[in-house]
Length: 131
Image 1 (cartoon, rainbow, N blue to C red):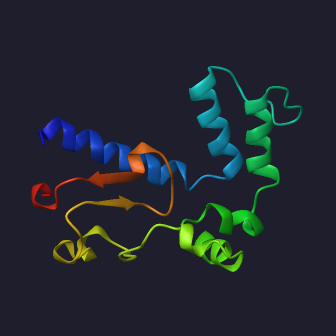
Image 2 (image 1 turned 90 degrees about the vertical axis):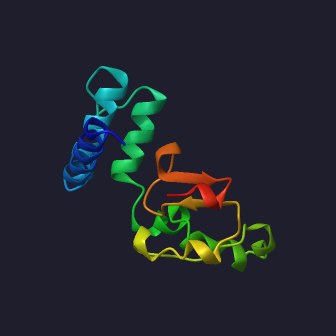
């Protein structure tokens, strides 16, 4: 990885740490404006995206957290009798340095529990090629 790429990655992590330390409404407003090009109307949301963001700020809270937590939702799914549908978990680690690569199969997926999207998981097709 080039020095430029490492610097860019470090800045991204610093920005993510900073923005997620702000109040939820502020974060949603910043992300909404960046994505849509106009200021989010939290007082009278009109578009579907405005309404979804309003829900994220005003309604969805700790009681709903279990449904978005990849680990906690497994308990809920299992309690509903659907546990056999869940993919196998090889382990849960706090830090990447704790992952015992030698114990994992040749192909696997690593996912972060704190977020979703392409940036937060890695599909490993050949364990030998992992650095």
